[in-house]
Amino acid sequence: MSDRIDKSSTVFVSIENPEHDRCVDFFSREDGSYGFEEFRRDTEDGGQWTPVHYYSGVAYLSPADALNAAERCVNWLVHVLTERPELRTRIGLG
Image (cartoon, rainbow, N blue to C red; front, side, top):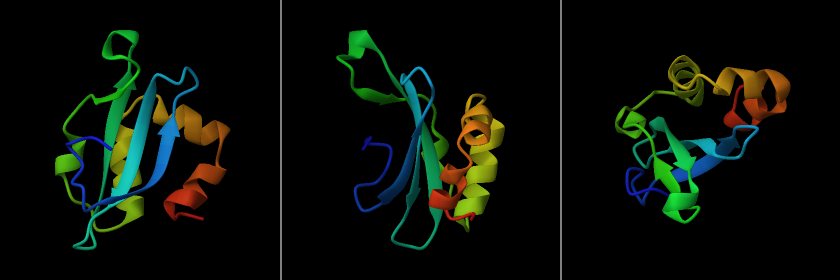
């Protein structure tokens, strides 16, 4: 988990792109809010996940709100969710 996602938060879904070099983590906070962050993994970083943006600073009221925002912000995510619709259920949108 990135330093941008508070240690008290719980990541409940992590979705990777087909190339396995980008991912989006969806998480819940202790205050009942939700969020997401996009990460990249590059060879020069030793294969570690590195945050790409500061999306995790925004709080959403529901997993659905976080997902809607992530789909608007992360270009490749819509394609992955179209190919693997079961991931929506894991996010809580079954």
